[in-house]
Amino acid sequence: RVSNDLKLVQVMVYPAAVKVYGETLYVIKALTALRKHLFADKQAAYQEAGDLLRRMTHYLTPASDNLVEVVKANQHMMLDRGLHSPVIDILRLSLERDTSRRAALHDTAEKDADSAKNPRRRDLFQECYNFLKTLCCNEPEAQSKMFPLIQTFADHVGIAKL
Image (cartoon, rainbow, N blue to C red; front, side):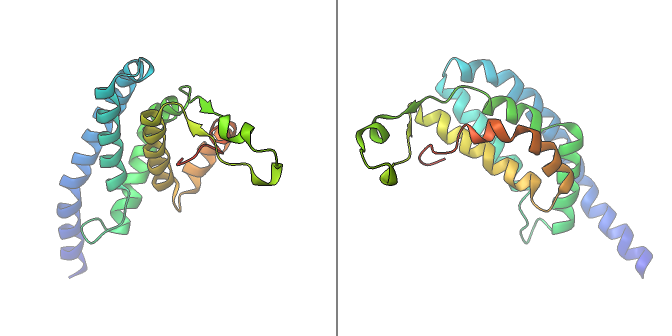
């Protein structure tokens, strides 16, 4: 019985794993290619990058059709392939702040969050952070790879809606 159950699990997981592996490789290439269009602030690039990130985040989110064991395997595979690298490269793009709300407040105790000058980029950054959060959830190896990037992440602290 155990042998049959193992065979069944392998058959069920294998096609899904192949699909996620192929999509991971595609998304790495696509995000890398999209970076220059994002830098040029092309609307279509924001839409495509956001769609790709949401799809990959879905593979890392436990659900009735996405068991925790499958999510773990997806985390390891995406991390091993380096999907986090082009995501982090996107987060290294400039996200300028509008500090006028902060500067207008005289009482330092009531400082408000800065708004992003480019809301599309801010929204894409949020998708990047959503992906990285799910990639790192209960995954110490992923967390250790993110730790050296704390300053990059800290640069975005204090931006409203991010």
